[in-house]
Amino acid sequence: MDPVVILSRQEQEYLLCAIESGLRVANRRQFFLWTQGQVQALLPHQVLVGLELGPGGALARLECVHGTVLAPGAQQTLTDAHDGLALRIARHCVRGGRLPVLADFGAAGRQPLEGLRDEVGQMGFDSVLVHGTGPTSGGGSVFVLFGLAARPDARHAYFLELLLPHLHLALERLPGSGIAAGAAPARPLSAREAEIVGWLRAGKSNDEMGKILGISGLTVKNHLQRIYRTLGVSNRAHALARCMDLRLLEDDAVQ
Image (cartoon, rainbow, N blue to C red; front, top):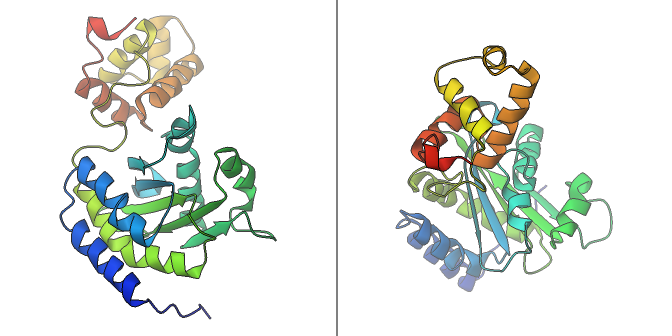
């Protein structure tokens, strides 16, 4: 039987404040201020990653908010759209049907997400709290909190469960794609990569592109995987849309 959690008067006030403030979130700045303000007051943490997962677990949106300075490369490790730690944790929990999930790696004994203990520790965190909506008609969402301020327990999981609908709706209201939305990619596309995206736009398959370019279909696939990682996308359609949005097919966008 799950433990019964009774909120104190102060916790009730914090919860009501967080819910009311969440109703007004309409852009990323407001999302940041809300999660790092009212949500933090009820559920202190170091990093929050919100993920929207489409059919089959495809990543449709990712937002990472934190009020602390992360080590160089840490955010990329957490939020990589292809194989980031937050994405792997979210998919693992959703596929296993285990939500919420609470892992306190500072406590004795085996923990949920035990296989990721070392990776989480290398990021400087000793706890992870995960909850999600499950599949919905508009796409499910999962929220992964790293580095809770106190030893996490059932109370923290309950707080996140109460806030989950409001986090989900706030994430859905944010404009555009949260996967590197509006931002330049980590590096420019190379001339070869831009060439491949151009043939991708023309509807060519990997094998067809390989014949045109004089390389193998496998080499084309490897180029596409690097393009996906650079753009923060997960498939051909998303890659093409991002390139067109950012005008990366123009001459001055390649090197």
